[in-house]
Image 1: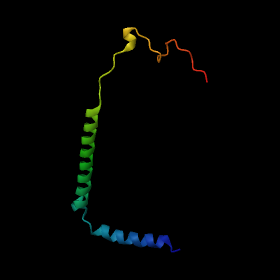
Image 2: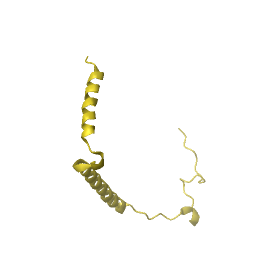
Image 3: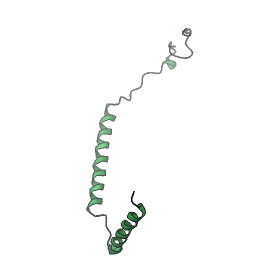
Image 4: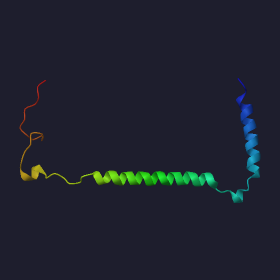
Length: 86
């Protein structure tokens, strides 16, 4: 197996020479940064549109409270039902 430290050292040497050529005062995100930002913005827009569509389907109307009307149901814990035998 080849020595990994030698290839890593060679890669760092090439990256270090590239870093010296970059002017630190003129570094910009460039086209790739714009593309990433645009894709993220489109994804957020699509998610918001989908969420709005799904929230429109939700029915927020609550059923009337049965305890306030004085009725007892068999599902309620205070209802007089016998426990299930198994």
